[in-house]
Length: 129
Ligand SMILES: [Zn+2]
Image (cartoon, rainbow, N blue to C red; front, side, top):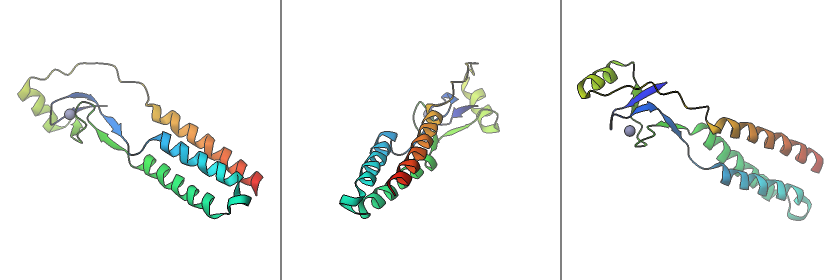
């Protein structure tokens, strides 16, 4: 759905801004896998700490999504259908172009990938224990 940025009058689909990056999360998960394999040499503390860290960052990344204006990154997008948006459009002679909606975000694919990694982890942990 298209929205209007009340700061710069940008009209378009809002973007989602997330905290943290999948790269860092994947590295922590990989470290966890490695430490899980070496559990008999290093003990249980390291893999447990890494697992908690990985879960924390993953959950934060998945729940910490903010919807922002793709132009100025402010959380200032309001629906085009709202009264305020309509009056802003009229007052500033903004043109609402009918551009196609962008395709589904890459994040969905990454969530699927993460799920696959989690299943793999369960299998690995099961094999190690
Ligand atoms: Zn904006």
